[in-house]
Figure (cartoon, rainbow, N blue to C red):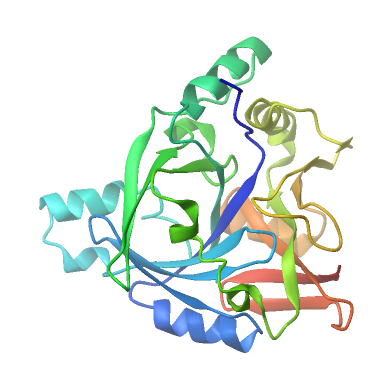
Length: 288
């Protein structure tokens, strides 16, 4: 059996306050994205909407169904809510996923690499996940995620489909991935880390991806990723790990902690490049 790739960008997660999926869907439509209904995840804690891109990756617009105060203190539901890895995250770009496997343990693969590389990253054993779509179809997958002390949101988690991926990522009809803004695919995901952590995070991500970065300076490290579908104009997406480059970025890092700072999208040649802000995160538009 061939070793599965561990560098295929699957999706990027954008969190908004509890019960706000409809509102964030409206906001992303105003930015020029075609937003599709998602559904409610297994367990009922979260719900989502999707923005599917032509490169096969997608944006997950997610929110908790209720605030933590909705659940009685000490109840099993409250304990489950508080234990969710995103429960204490500030709204905005909070996490990202690579495409996993339903038949091979990604955690064992990465942990073996990390041991050989002598890097600090560790992944927990796989857990089952799923979601019921708004049309009633039940989706199933396996999640491989970094251990609690290994930087969830800096290192990716992996999502391996048990049911067909096209159920989870509806690329058909093709109009699902056509956007008024002209967005084609992801150009890059940029993650901010502390100056003192850049070397360790570089080693960790190298163990995760299984390849050395394509560029490496004292301030910024870049890998080239794959996408689930064909490449779009402008090339493959990049994963960038960097230290803050402006005072504003340093302020963001101090306030939010290490994690995704901005996501850039490739747009068709007829669109104007630039920057936009959602209420909770930065978006960059680049020509494809």
